[in-house]
Length: 403
Ligand SMILES: Cc1ncc(COP(=O)(O)O)c(C=O)c1O
Image (tube, rainbow, N blue to C red):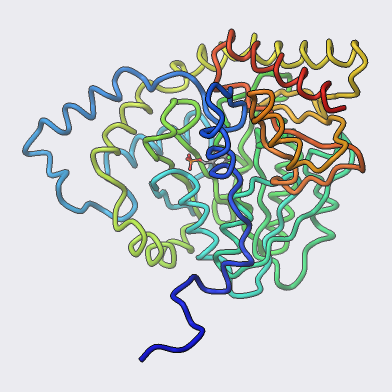
């Protein structure tokens, strides 16, 4: 029987979930032929040679058993490689941890949010946050608690401010270092202080390290999961999307507190059953290429990072009131504060439609700009140097035209 006035639509709950900004931008870019994107977080290099070879071999091997479901957490061979990577390169203390492979590290975060949040439970996210983290918490029925930061351009997580936001409903604190969108590497001592804070309050520290390989400045990346005894309360998440140039392959993995595993099995079994098995072969080949393969590629970003800083300095010297909120020392992002006579959305649309360049508005990372100003995330990893130069010229000309 049909109910008058009812139409098949989504649950009202979804109205409370942030709308994803990247698909909106991608559509605007598609409608503007020739637009150069500094929006999405990708690199411009292909995966290690061995990755395609491993996939070809897997597909050609009729005995490989890859057509069948495999273990929920991932195939044994890959889990051995991951354990090796996490202990030798990230120096994680895996005592009390379990490992899990997912189709991209976003999936691991989403699963964790499901595992941690009862309706109304809180997850603390320092501002600026990564939007998909907020969305995952909302989708799980949790409440993302945005905590603005002070000092260093307001971009580095501050343990005292995070501590002040803890309530009886808090389940976890999230950090992203190297940062998206900040492009900053959080000093290891800060991450360790946050990790101890979590231990003290019985919270989970979710440390998103998708950009672990992308450090350009003086502050090193050190996972908080490397702290002795942290395994029982720390989630450390990694992605093959960035350093290995495999964003479209959808491969990620994480170390999680072992006591969460039985609950995580429920989510992963329902969602994925097992990570795609031919892809796991590809992941194994990427990890075999290792950090020594990634290092020169990450280093190849240096001239592009310099180009962003030089273009900003030159625009400022020419009278445009722009500045980078912080030195872009990590990942491949810079946060630009710029004049904005109208709304941030209007500015972004105008840059795409009228000036042929796309960037992401700071508000999609929880950043609130002062009146008359906007913050833009510039991703300098996905355009080769010549196109990046052209895109930056378009960006600063576009900003000057509307200032
Ligand atoms: C902080 C952060 N975590 C996770 C992801 C997504 O990683 P994956 O492609 O492995 O899902 C991104 C992608 O932009 C990111 O910036």
